[in-house]
Each structure stands twice: as structure tokens, then as C-alpha cells.
Length: 324
Ligand SMILES: C[S@@+](CC[C@H](N)C(=O)[O-])C[C@H]1O[C@@H](n2cnc3c(N)ncnc32)[C@H](O)[C@@H]1O
Image (cartoon, rainbow, N blue to C red; front, side, top):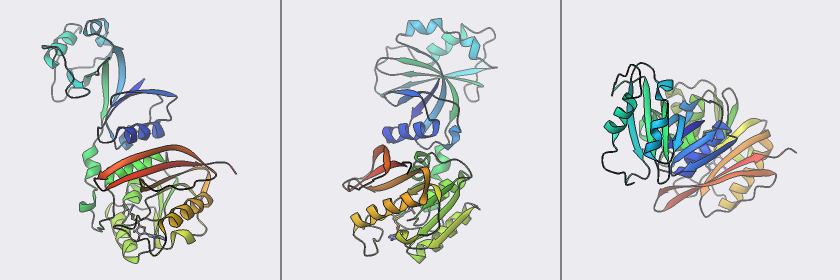
């Protein structure tokens, strides 16, 4: 059983990102701790997860931790970390990392501690009703995705999204490497950069020539090879068939609607995406939270919200093309 310590910014988005990549048979969420019955996948792709674990056991009391065979998971040396969800969860005095460290120590044949660089990383995650005893498999390097935020790219526009959000959108589409991903409203390319770095073949269009130039500049900056970006009206794209469409059309605030009515632009681009997707392909589309759109012939996989600031909350729809 795998478990995921989700980041606190947007738990729904973090959960759906894991489920889209893992194709889990079953799962449950306890605070921001997600337990999923799934196969191994490329955990390094995740944007809104902090840590990935092998779940050793789930218990309800500290006394039950005594029954766990820590030796079975131990390699060379170890360290223990404690997480309380929520942060202000009350734990009785004395139940701290040194306490659990000595408990594990007493159960090992040749115990050795290495706080900085342990081969065996035990994490104890406490929630209101449960204690999860976990073996850390991976800490997600979210900082390296943040290094691709707007301010670090050569081509800038205020309408662009940050790297973590763009990556999560790509992950929600469930796209695999070497498959084709289209962003018909690509702007300066945040979505295409993330998909390109995950080895997808990326295609982008924008009606604004300046955006097209900056988008190409950004893709080259991140050494993405398999891309095609052109100036084109998203509603007039021809001859394209893709596995996923992931897009953030304009809201008419920082990015121009180029004279279109917002309802018309979204509804037409959903119809257009249907025609450009292969059967079973996925459309991930972002919009202002108050916009209602029509998505005939698609199955709604999930609907999520993401607060950007006081004045803007984004709605994200993940839609799967139904067989025609
Ligand atoms: C919200 S921005 C996209 C931002 C992009 N996701 C990023 O992070 O850089 C929307 C883009 O759609 C473009 N656009 C507006 N109407 C369009 C149309 N009919 N066809 C193609 N692009 C259009 C705008 O020029 C703008 O660059």
C-alpha cells in the first residue's frame, strides 16, 4: 500500500493529481494523508505531494507501535520523523522523535542512527484518530518545479501560471511520455514546458504573435525538443489529433479574449477539443470559478477549485472524451 503526504495548499487538487497518475483501485484520505491501493508509478512527476511512502502499518494507539517488526524494513541506519495533522494536534508530552527513535532502536539487531542521511527513513504521521507508520520512499523536489515559475523564464507575461500548478494540470490529464499534448491557448507556455519536461510531444497555439515568440523562447530555454508552436486562432486549428488537451483560455482580465464573448470562446473550444482528441482522450480546462460551460459527449472526471488570490479562484474541469 502506498501513502502520500499531500501539500496543504490545495488538498483536493493534490489528491486528484495522485489518483490521475496512480489509477488507484481504492483510496482514503485522512486529513492530508492519502492512502491508495495502487501500483508504483513515477512519483517524481507529482507537484502537490510532499512525500511518498510505503505504508507499514496503521494503528490507533502508541502502545500498538510496539508490535511492529521494524527490523523487516531496516537497512544500514535509520532516522525518525513525526508529522502531526493538523499541526496543532495534541500529543502527550514525551512522545517526540527521540522517544520513537529509542523505541525502534530497542527492536533492531544492529541499530545505527543517521539523522542527516539515513538509508531507512521512518515517518510517524499522527492524525486525530490514527497513527500511520511509514517508510519514506521519496521526498518530492517541489523547489525544482518552483524554479520554473514565471519570473525565472526569459519570456514573461502576467497572465502566465506558476510551474507547480501547470504541472498538476498536466498530471490531471494522465498523459504518458511520447504522447501528444495540445494547449490551444498557450500564452508563454507554462503548461507546454511542464509537459515537455515529462517527455510529451507538445503543440501550442496562440492568437498573439508576441506570446508565440515568448513561448518558443521559453521552450528552448528549458531544452524542450519535441514542440510545435504557431500563431493560430484556437477555434480554427486544423489537422491535429492528440491524447490530451490541457489549457487555460483567457478570462478577459490579464489576457485578451480578442473580441470573443467568454461563454462563446469556452464552449466552442470545448467542442473543438472534442474533435481534436483521440477516443478516450482527456481535456483539462481552467476557467474563472463563476463560469458555467457545456460539455456534451464528455464524461466529467472531476471538478476542482484553486484559489489564486482574493479576486480570483480558478475552476478546473477534467473531462474524458466518450467513445463516439
Ligand atoms: C490565460 S492566457 C494563457 C496562459 C498560459 N497558460 C501560460 O501559463 O502562459 C490565455 C492566452 O490565450 C490567448 N488567446 C485568446 N484568444 C485566443 C484565441 N481565439 N485563439 C488562440 N489564443 C487565444 C491569449 O493571447 C493568451 O495568451
